[in-house]
Image (cartoon, rainbow, N blue to C red):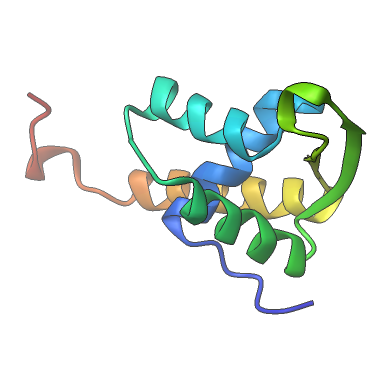
Length: 110
């Protein structure tokens, strides 16, 4: 397994795969990120991140059945692994800990 640090975009992709369940493939991840995060990203960035997360052991993938709509091409479906879930939880915990260290009087939420 390669490095286990999660970049911000990788974390977003990993969260999206987890939320999509059995329907997580590159196009659905791209659409979900556009809808929920209001971010437009190109499909190659999604593919790169998915494969990198798979190399890190945070995702697994398998091919679905070929369809005539896709010209006989198969979709590659991704699933989050237990290691991926742990990485997300650790990232969430770290952020929560850091938020707790911010002095309440040093800033105001607008």
